[in-house]
Image (cartoon, rainbow, N blue to C red):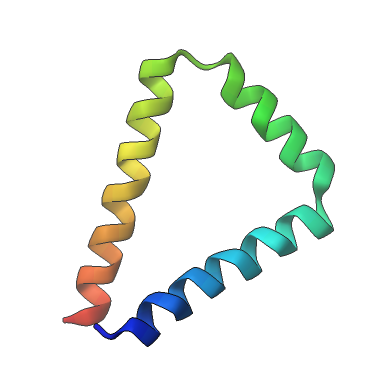
Amino acid sequence: MTGTDIWTGIAMVLVIEGLVYALAPSLVERLLEALRALPVDTRRTLGLATLATGLIMLWFLRA
């Protein structure tokens, strides 16, 4: 993995997040409200599951 790969990944995240905010801002607000209603432990578990899924996807894509 090179520095270019890291910057490409960061750029892709920004593009996708920008699209979500530009195309569906009310959906983002509802999602944030739903997340706020979840207990902290549930949010932490969701974050860890998302992290693990991303790592597994990278592992398979790089193999």
